Amino acid sequence: MNSTFEINRIEIKSGTTINTSFFDNLYYWSNIAKMKDKNNYVIYAGTENQKRTDLQVLGWQSLTTVLK
Image 1: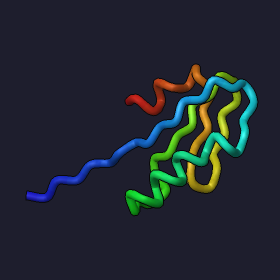
Image 2: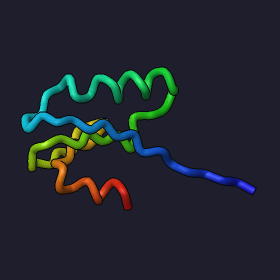
Image 3: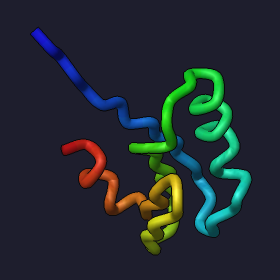
């Protein structure tokens, strides 16, 4: 039996302006876990959503899209 699952890595920040330092812990974790940069999310206190090359930045109101 093959069982596959995906892990969502989520970093939650209180800042209202996106800062590249928000991504540091996700990159660090992906490196030590030897996981591809997939399903990486930064949730922040702002409202703008952005799709980056290796992660998604979501305003706090979009948190439910990750939890589905």
